[in-house]
Amino acid sequence: MTKQEKDKEKLFADNRKAYHDYFIDETYEAGLALAGTEVKSIRKGKANLRDSYAAIVDGECYLINAHISPYDQGNQFNHEPRRQRKLLLHKREINRLIGLTMQKGYTLVALRLYQKRGKIKVALGLARGKKVHDKREAEADKEAKRDIEQAFRLRQKGEA
Image (tube, rainbow, N blue to C red; front, side, top):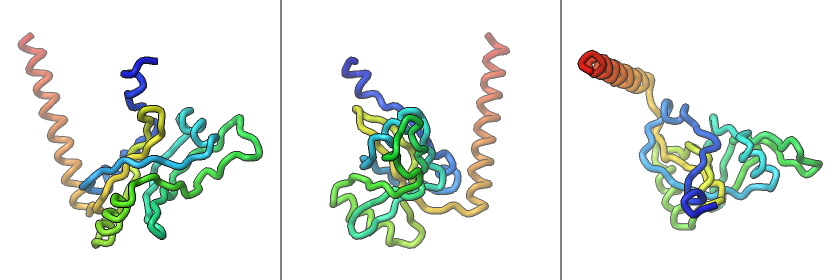
């Protein structure tokens, strides 16, 4: 395996719903403390980040409500699918996140689960909740952008 192949990120799970439900202000990268069967299960693509978030308890950050299916070839030492998993962050990052999440309306949401340089990482987003009218506005913008792209393609096709 070459260095370029090793540095390339491989995506295992994506939380698209988070971008629909929240405004993402900042993103953070954190490592995960995982059991061996969890790593094998994630690499098989058996992870789900829907409704998962991070919480800070006693100065340590945990990933809560992330579902990692039990490994098929696992034995009696297989892991619990929805257990809390410790996130590996620097102390200053945790202190900063404590201050930011104490502000009204902010939460930490899991965005992506991926592999980087052989290690499994999670991308956390510092998020503010969207109201219903914000979601409608975002949907209208997306639809307008899609219509413009379609018109542009049709125009190029007609001239070619």
